[in-house]
Image 1 (cartoon, rainbow, N blue to C red):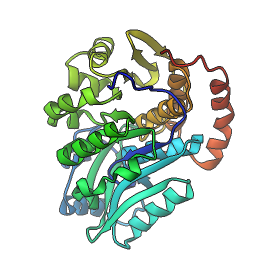
Image 2: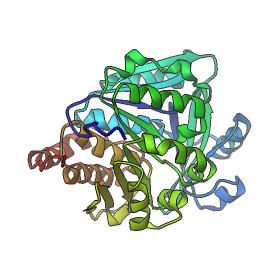
Image 3: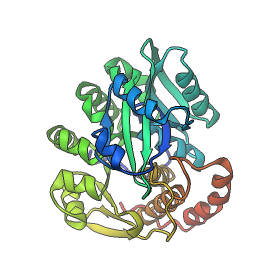
Image 4: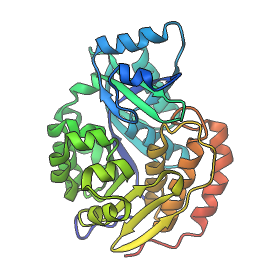
Length: 342
């Protein structure tokens, strides 16, 4: 982290990630995950042939469609909260899913910075287990060939915050260029570790880039995969490398550490329907709070409030009606701002 960087204050948020359309299916049991060699709760990259095998199993069953990709989910929720956002990605030329994606972003007031190429828009087959855990079988499609050409310094200079999903760490050259550009523009950089198997596969590279990041989000499995430690111990190890470290504990809330001070954030007691998008929503609430100049506690509480609402619905996002019901509660948290410690 740059020593003179102010973490919290008014600013626009730019996200970058894999632009994917989620195809959401309910599984009758977890046996199919074993059959398809998909570790439960993980994100596994697949090719078009394997995607066809999975989709053929469901036959004529119509999936729930949603714009996806971790960072895109986060940016969409920030925009719903009232933040000003842009998103960098890559989609197919004039294909149905690519058009669906652009329409969604513009409808929510998000500025798209997309390249369109001949490869089809990527899809994430989202498999929901009976216990609500989600497993992703992801065909990256157009997203897989993003390069440094997707990075435009003029775009970055118009924003104060830059958020990256952990799934992007597989593209080393792209991420190095994006992080360097964000640092050159004195942006606050946040990284969501995204999936424990991604962390395990790219551990050395994540260790290499983490000191250049200001805010890191991890759930318990991701924190364990990165540090080899549980919860508070993992939080402390992460805090040695970034200004703000967050470990999400599901229904037990979350832990946030900044400058050696621990903030314990409670979670609402709710009945979980679908865990898809919970972590993305948490990051959205926290980053929205930062971009509004709110204190650590308020950032965490907004994050937790949004995440616990999302787990009560199918899919990674709330509807317009659900946001309308939730926003007054968020505004009350904002109103009691304790300010970010300097």
